[in-house]
Structures are given as structure tokens and as C-alpha cells.
Image (cartoon, rainbow, N blue to C red):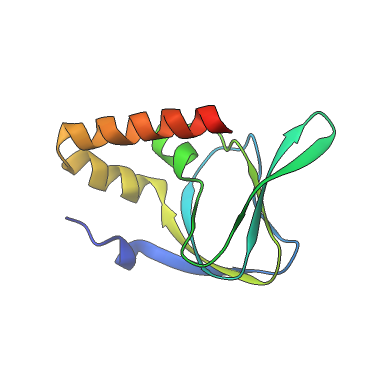
Length: 116
């Protein structure tokens, strides 16, 4: 199995920095190494905070696994360091796993999307 840690990159965002934007294509899964990230969803002209993420939280998993545009916008609340893992690397690992693993991810993503 491919070691994702060798294909990841650490990136720092200053407080207020936009990490990804709702509606944009997904390219990375993000792991919060340090700091805090607000996940917000735009409804009309209003931004609603959906979740506050901190160390060891994962961001953008649904969009990366379903190959759909970002459903949320991520904004660094404070200076934040993230580990970026490319979508293609994650999908490569999943494709090598037994088929039922992919089915589990699909089911989990569908359930997560229905709660947002």
C-alpha cells in the first residue's frame, strides 16, 4: 500500500486565510496539524458556521471521496498548519482496497452530506 505521508505537503494559513471555497473543485484532503479552521456554508448572502475544526481533524473528505465540488468554505480562524494530501493519492489507495471499502466510504459520505 502506498504511504500517503510521503506524498503530503504541509502548508500554513494565516488567520482569516481561505483554505478552500464552497463550489470549487476538490483537489486535496486536509489534516489539521495545528490551529483552528471554521467550516462555513453560504446560504443566500449569509455565511453559517457549520463546524470548528482543530488539531487532528480532517477537512474536505466528502468532496474528495465523491469527486464533487466543495460543499463548504474553510477559513483559518487562527494561524493554522495543514497537511495536504492529493485526491489522486487517496483514490489510488482506495482503489487497491477490497471493493467493500469503497462502498463503506460511499455510504458514509452520503450520510454526512445529508446532515449538512
